[in-house]
Structure formats: structure tokens, C-alpha cells
Length: 65
Ligand SMILES: [Zn+2]
Image (tube, rainbow, N blue to C red; front, side, top):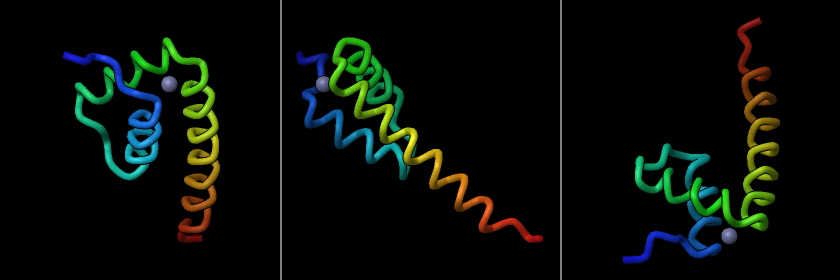
């Protein structure tokens, strides 16, 4: 049984997670991988920053007034 995701799988999950929440198992495995893989943890940070910035823009744009 393989508990570790590959970096490729992690990248897929990171972008998937922007659209829909991951299942508990996926989320746990993702975090486990990120805690051990500096490479993916950097990628996750970048994706998170970009996502936060675009979410902010979006919500500002949707303000009724
Ligand atoms: Zn990795």
C-alpha cells in the first residue's frame, strides 16, 4: 500500500483543490507529502498565494456597492 503521493499527483490535487474540497484521505496524504517535500510545499504556497489574490479580486468585483 502506497501512502505517499508522487509529486505529480500532488500537483494535480493542489489544482483540483482550488475547485472542490478534497476528501479527508486525499487531504491528509497531500499534507503529509507537503510536510516532507520542500519542492511541493513551495508549489503549494505559490498556488495558495495566487488563489488568495484572485479570490480577493473576485469578491471585490462582486461587491454590490
Ligand atoms: Zn513532492
